Image 1: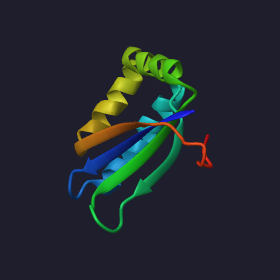
Image 2: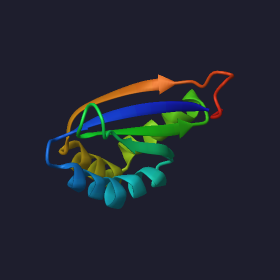
Image 3: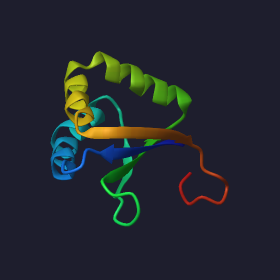
Image 4: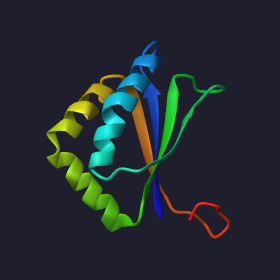
Length: 104
């Protein structure tokens, strides 16, 4: 498995709206194109207005197939646009577990 960590800096005052759009639009459409949300956290100490998602993929080929499917789905693109309007800044990292990780 490989993982994409996505940290989303939410527009101040928009956290509840972002979570609503994420749950009702983005996540269902993401599942349809093969996205797998492994975990999601909300920062409560430190950088506020931040959500961190962990997305799981079998390998790079699987990740590329999902990314291609996302670009071909009008429903996903619409949901992503709604979500993007509530994000001030995003960073992503490709993560590969070490032999010590409980997540493989």
